[in-house]
Amino acid sequence: MDYSQAAIFLGVSQRSLQRYVQEGRVPYVRLPQRGAWAGIRFVRSDLLRWLEQRTVKPRRDRVRSAAPGTL
Image 1 (cartoon, rainbow, N blue to C red):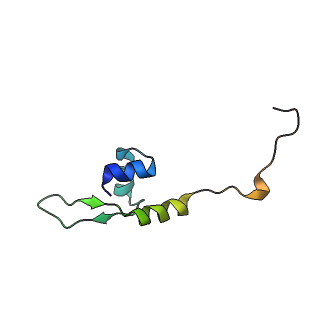
Image 2: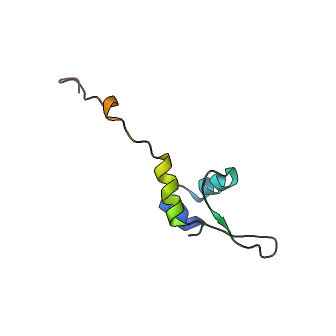
Image 3: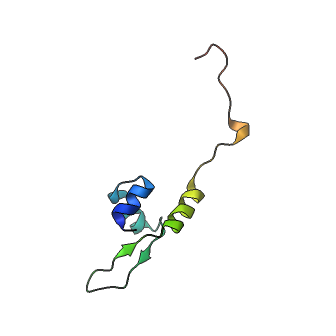
């Protein structure tokens, strides 16, 4: 995937994704350098794994229902 496809896939802006790459927060593959510029691509399976590792899942013992009549 390129930047625009990966940004859509992750639900973030392209600028945010660029920042994640610069900070080393998201997995990516650098293509061989051609001239002064080397392209970057994203592997879908790597992004899925990255998302799964960062997804916060609610703990069942922390979930509380509202008391009746308080809504």
